[in-house]
Length: 92
Image (cartoon, rainbow, N blue to C red):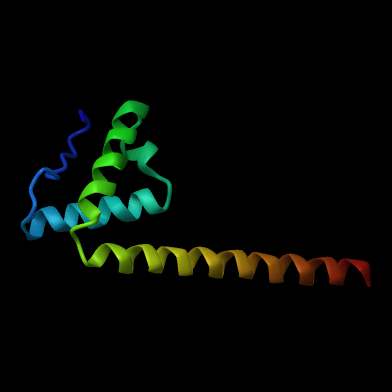
């Protein structure tokens, strides 16, 4: 991974700084933005694979994933309501 962001994912017990990097990159991955951080597809896939492996050992990972999922659901619901309201206004 040549872009300067190095994952220290080979450790079973990452230190606090490494955990922060993992959480941050997990958020990036959950938002489907790894391709921006790692423009090379091979590097993005490698990072994604490493994140999946290391996230099993971090208790915060499930909370991050649940939070991202709740945000996505909220955004989808807001778009649906806005679209429905807009369509009703235009048909009047």
